[in-house]
Length: 197
Image 1 (cartoon, rainbow, N blue to C red):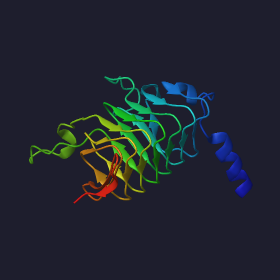
Image 2 (cartoon, rainbow, N blue to C red):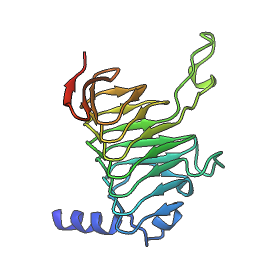
Image 3 (cartoon, rainbow, N blue to C red):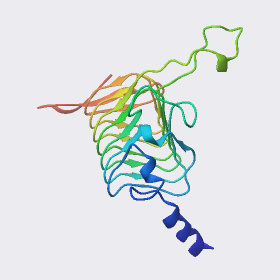
């Protein structure tokens, strides 16, 4: 059984030269999406850099439904040499930009769209779904279970602690934890790492 599963994982993975890989807007050399995948659709609006590994059971989507014409291209951009952990979801509608050398733990969720709830008499599914661009700077690490919500701007070389929820801006070279994530340490040139109250 293990031999068969190992074979299935090897041949089921998506690479840049596979038919499935060629559906992406960009799929860099040396990159791979592990098998099995969860949901993947509108690949032409998803760009993956070179040398990037995306774990199994991952969701990658652009827009609300397969075949949709998206307003921006790319909707989701993942840079070079990234590592996206098993079970993670990257669900874009407008713009999710992930820099180079970004690593995540398992079960990280990143989205640029939320549900509106202005009219309490109507189902939430029938209300506006505001979109706000998300960016994650190069060299950052998102710990297990991190949730990145619309409008979040994570700087370069940032560490986000496990199970944090990022809703706003986190500056370069800092450590943030919690829900909502707050900066607890920041690197200052000439002074080193400083605690933030």
